[in-house]
Figure 1 (cartoon, rainbow, N blue to C red):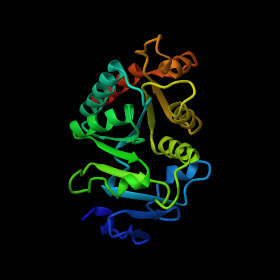
Figure 2 (tube, helix red, strand yellow):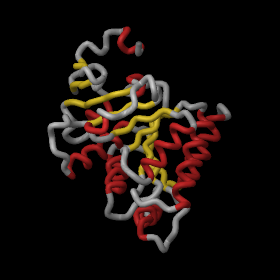
Figure 3 (cartoon, helix red, strand yellow):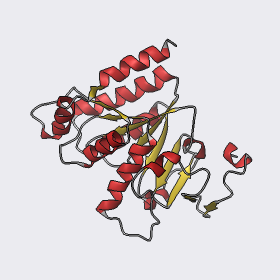
Figure 4 (cartoon, one colour):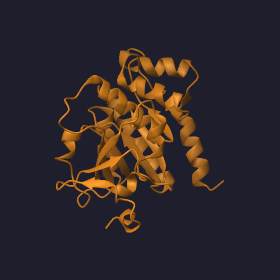
Amino acid sequence: MNNLFNFGLWEDASIFNNGIQIISSTSNIYPKRILAIPKPPNEIYISGNLDLLVNERDLYICITGSRVLDIHVEELVTDTIRRLIERTGNRIIFIIGGARGVDNVALNSIIKYKGKVVVVTPFKKLRSCNTEESQPNILYLWLYPDTIVLQKKMFLQRNWVISSMCHLLIMFKGDIRSGTMSTVHYAGKLGRRVYVNDKINLLDRGYGGNVLLLKSGYSSINYLYEILDICSRGV
């Protein structure tokens, strides 16, 4: 049994028969970082490894990017996740949005390299998701019950939640007018460190957000590698 239950922390979490749990914003285990966003959800719905919800030992890193892939960014996402897991001794919990494109490549790479991940995805997907027993390093999370029809504003709130839960964010690819850019914007407003992929194709409009962020002074992803190199040497 998950060790959080041993301390009675889950007494105020309602448990459905299908394994999905509701956690109120007044609960001791509701992530405090989420409360910092405008209009935090009153409840969150979760399924999977509960240890990943609140973990003071590991670094939470958000991976975000376009739904439209190209071979270069696909390879970069995979390689970045592999390097991060290896260099930190798997002391990272990734946070992704569960969409197509970069999110999907990230999830497959995290599973491949036995990393840990929180997937913030619509509640209906939770009913068909893998259980903790089959995927012990995954936690699925959503913000609304499945009786509510999905609307655009819900995904903007999802982006707030993703940004709030992470310590830092890596943006791989995004158009100027995109959900990816909203996630980056929210992360900046919350004081999170943001790193941007600078290996871009200037002929691809899908990298317009990358160009704008780099021109605005955001750090290249290469600086993240340097920081992790120092940490891995124990300096």
